[in-house]
Image (cartoon, rainbow, N blue to C red; front, side):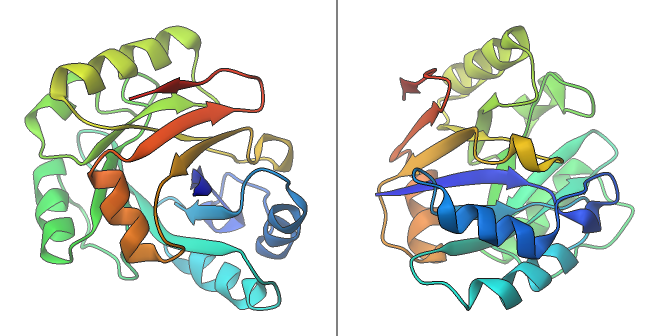
Length: 202
């Protein structure tokens, strides 16, 4: 069982002050979470930098990802180490991900920069139903969307500041490698929770 913060930004996002080295140091001492997905805005440079520091520790895992700014809103793609072309619309990004066997997660659909109901038109793999920076109402709407689309719900902090890291997580029943984790998420073998005690199962 692996606990992952599936939505984290580093300084390479431009609006985050989370340093890659500090991120891994905090992950190493966290008693609950042992993996993280780097989802910087429109860049994979943060992931590349984080992988340099994680080599010094055992038992930690980092997933490659991007939070892509499409015309319709933001979409998280996990499992890719290359950039899509820009500008791009949501449907084109889904095609990009499918060609690379990557995972499509709809982050904070009803928060600012979210896809909103346009998510219903996409072939996504999961919905972020617990976003640490979203309101309870926004998260409830995302949960309802996941249920209506029969998609797994996942959690991520969307951290841009160190004190936001690992406050919520996705518990994944998978082996400690990227392919196994992505497959388990797609299959819905997940449970989400938070350090605040808010937890529910799909």
